[in-house]
Structure formats: structure tokens, C-alpha cells
Image (cartoon, rainbow, N blue to C red; front, top):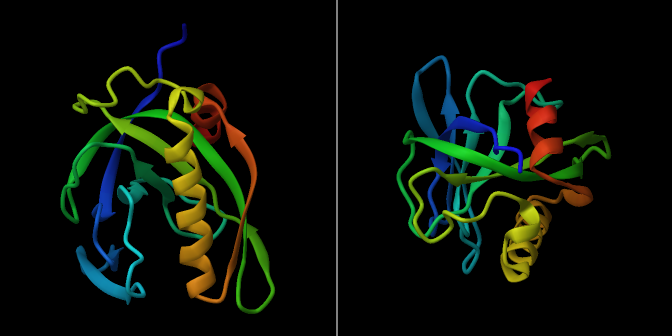
Length: 160
């Protein structure tokens, strides 16, 4: 079995938070950018892969599947287990790719055996898709998963 690719991710929005933080590279600090509606919280730590750039001009997004949350700015070494290849339609109607990489922290005990998206419990996968869809709907945007990438495909995409 091929070894999953390890990367370092930076947490922007911790698990269980209803605030959206964005890292401001000029200020080298985090800025509160949004408060999610009542009942909507990040299901797992969400952040970015420093040193990368997606089609939207921001660093690539990653959600980290773990039994506990951390804090904004925390660096987490993660094993890439897959990605949700997605299209996001903005308020102005423009559609762009906005993939979500899925990682498992190397220190996770509960998810230590998970190396591919296929091994993730189906309920977690469904929860991730529903969260991103609802999160974007709240902002008047559409989020559509176009493909589920396995660990190898996701690592290749990350390497581009």
C-alpha cells in the first residue's frame, strides 16, 4: 500500500467554532471574517495548506479529521487521505474550482488507521459534504462536489 502524503496544515477555524477566521498574511494575524448562523459549526478543524494557491487565489483548503479541535494558527502535520473536488458558484454567478483536501493529523489516535477516504466512516463523509453545502448556501453561494479523490489523486493535485 502506498504511503499517504504528509503535509503541514494551518488551522484557521477550530472544530466546534461558529466563527470563520482568515489568516491575513500582511498582518501575520487572524481576522474574524464571519459568524456562522446558529447551529452551524465547523465539524472538524478547517484551515489551509501554507505555500499553496487555489483557483480562488487563496491557499488550498483542508479539513482535518480528528477526535479533538485545536486553535487558530496551530500547525498540524496531516496525512492526506483524499479530497472533495468541487465547484463553487459565487454571488455574481461565476463558477470556480474550490477543492477541499481531507487530512488526518499524524497524532490522531482515533483515526490512526485511516489512510484513504474510502476508509472514513460514511457518516463523516456525508457530514463534510453537507457542511460545505450549507456553509456556502448561507453566504448565497453554491457548492457542488464533482468528484471524490483518493489519497494518491489528492496528493498529485496538491503537488501541482
